[in-house]
Length: 147
Length: 415
Image 1 (tube, chains in turn cyan, blue):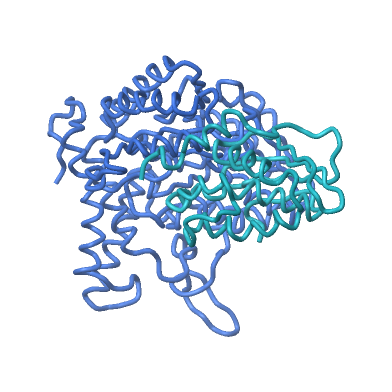
Image 2: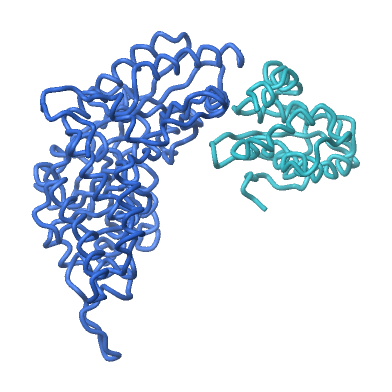
């Protein structure tokens, strides 16, 4: 296990140059998520009409893993149906848990598979998912400790 | 027994001391371990590990119950630690030492047994911005139940308590004042004796969270003049699940039991039970006997090294690490108090605390990252988390050199 396996180039690239970082001028759904283990917080705003995600923006101060996950997730989500993204939640969790090695549907997010060997950092990758899920589900707030 | 020479003036022989700590010989990610998470929990010398092992192999029995030989041996060893700890912190007597699972339980004992029966709506409890959650949350729970209020004494940018503000808060409404002796995040050593004098003058009991102080320098509860002093064993080279509340005898005598059960009674009848005297009144159930035997060994070990030698070496490590870290571009240290224990919290520009800690771990270096159970302090500095390197007497300058080099590599990677 090397540091490079976790902080892969694609992860570092999304951390250094996050896509869709910022707030949206117009949004239909929004939520604030907190990871109580480290205190990181993330805000996700979504412009989603008729179940289709037209835009997504994220903001907040967070670690490389959270930032890169949010960035990759945003690229995956924009232009897709909210239901489609919700369906990716389960394979992403299984990827982090090491139950599967790869899921084609997750695209570049597969780069986070090494988190299976860093259980203390898994919540960092779960935060953007939990926050997006909350936003689309109409909850204003969530934490990585919520069921 | 100890690796330390008899000559009292000789400095600590760190190389030999390290040989007492088996865990320090291991590698992490293929690199020699550098353990800088001592404020979280310290490593244990073989003297402690062997004392626990020997207890289970040769003496294991329950305490204060059995009349057989093993029961006597177990009770003698367990109660022996009470004597050692009483001497170690200069208590008036051994019955002022209540064994607990740690500092958190000790503080909760004061909360429920001492304070709750006295607390009314409108009363106040004073603490500081730099408290660990263990010295905040128990008071908040009581405040919510009773309608009392928590008042918070502020700190300055250097991470020092503003003493006059603390003293200003000590009004007749205050039923208890609390203060952390050494901040687990900043390393700040608070002027406990001065606060105790001010509190005493106003008839307010002072509780000190001594969790981070006990491992670093000699504690004299009588000289400090406080009323309650809470400590934990596992940060001072002892087993986890050991700790104690020291309180003046007259305070303990006034306090009703917190837990009910075995060992804490004198006579039990269904029409009324009489309780044992302190400290056993507060020690219901079978305690962590082997753990306290280990804590006794930890006290012996620390005394064999010499407390002044430990203070001197840790001071040197702190000064050396501070100077080296200050030379790292973009690095900010949190906590630059005049009086400081060997704890350094920091952040590096452009790098998150968790990423730094994960990448340092890959270099074999264990540091803590996060909020360190001190949210209000993080809010004061406006950061979600910091990295903390905390030293023990078995750490070396070479380890600090490797740590600072590794930080350089890690910064490049995240930059």
